[in-house]
Length: 197
Image (cartoon, rainbow, N blue to C red; front, side):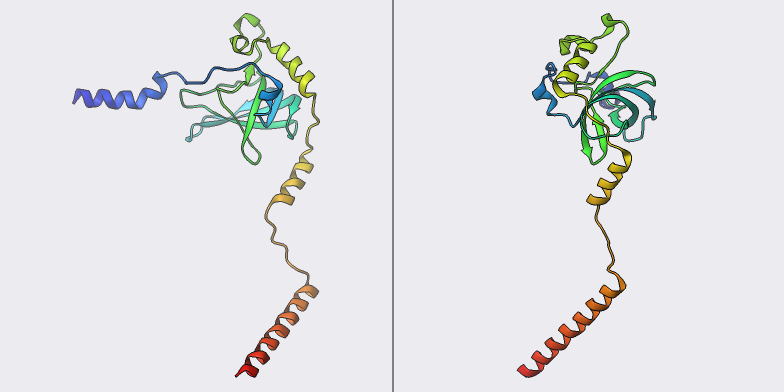
């Protein structure tokens, strides 16, 4: 019985006992940037509480957009419950490397290149893997990718309208024409069928 309880406890807590297993992080390069849909430097406005699905959302105001078509305010989903959880706090500044999980749903993971700005550079543990300071990486992104314009929300709404399924109804005159054409076609089919008999 004790073994069963211990096994259950280990199974239940395994995600918290074992660290997140990420592959070695390569320094950011222009080619590596191609693997991300949106790259920006921004500030955290707020963070939602962790949901039942283990996902939370961080809301950012973007200061500099290096890649992607997004508006100045953007939300990013992240893991908040597993061993690979991330943590964001209001007021923090981040370089974010995000991908679309589906249309208009950006996500980041702890294994990506997203990194937080530290006032004290000696606390910046990201710089070991990145082989650059936060400011050096910002400068690299600005130089290699440039600063992109923001998408105005109305433009994004127009794009959504274009790509969403439509259920357009014909005008009254077109409905009348369709009805007359349908009746005419049915009449021709009826006459052809009658002649064959």
